[in-house]
Image (tube, rainbow, N blue to C red; front, side):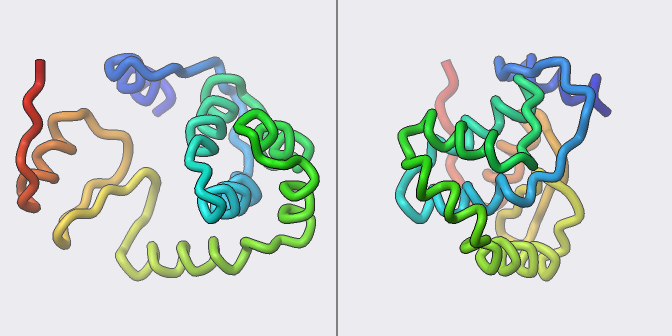
Length: 140
C-alpha cells in the first residue's frame, strides 16, 4: 500500500517521505477544524507535509502547536483548543456524516451519489466529476 501511495503521489508531483509509523490523527483533525473555522486553510497542506513527508507524530499536541504556528495561527490558542478538545464535537459530527454516507476510508470522493475510496489517479477523479456534471478543465 505504501509503495502504491508513493507512486501515485510522485506521479502527481506531491512529496512523500520515508514514513514508517502510523499515528492517530484525531487531534490533527480537531486542530484543522479550528483552523478552518478561523479561515486558515493552509493547515491542511502543513499537516499533510508533517505526516506524509516529515513523519511527524501528529498525535503529539506540541507538534500540532508548532505546525499551527508555522501557518500563522496563535500558539497559545492552538494549545488551548487541543487541551480543551473544543473541536471534538465538530469532528464527531463529520465522522458521523461520513459513516452515514458509507465512507470506509480516506480519502473518499463523493459526487452526485457516486464515490471513490482511496488515493486515485487524476483521470478517475476527473471521470467522477464529469459524470456528476462538472465540465472538464482544459489541460495544457
